[in-house]
Length: 171
Image (cartoon, rainbow, N blue to C red):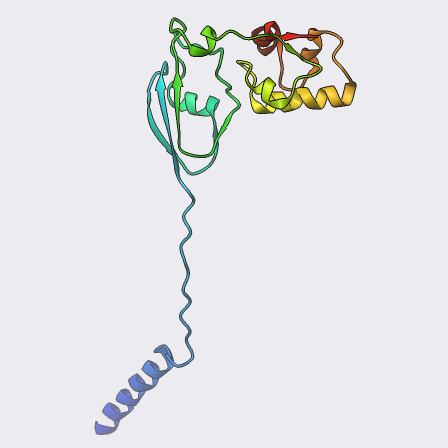
């Protein structure tokens, strides 16, 4: 009987030594948890659900507006670049069509397409920095503009954008 207890005791000690972790050879690995940068976009004005939205990845304005339930019927879409990529904290206000926008009250002199620089093109309402760069790239590839209608050949300028901007240019 005494031998049985001794064998059972030795068996448990052996199993504990075999299973129990060995602290001498173990190394602790310090893993840092990396969280993606989050940013907040505050969408106000003429959208169905204006509020602050938090994101971890870049998002285009068109996708943000879909999340916000879409534009209202009074939204002024003439100055909204739906392809603009949001990557940091920003506040975006969608104005009513009946509001007097500061840009609509400014007096613009016509810009010569063939001598315009990037800073001149960006000042035109409805032209983003990307569109301005594309205008300059087109001019470098194909030479001087022969007519304002050639803007339709520039990347990112469709019929709607052309109708908004053509009045600001001359040849």
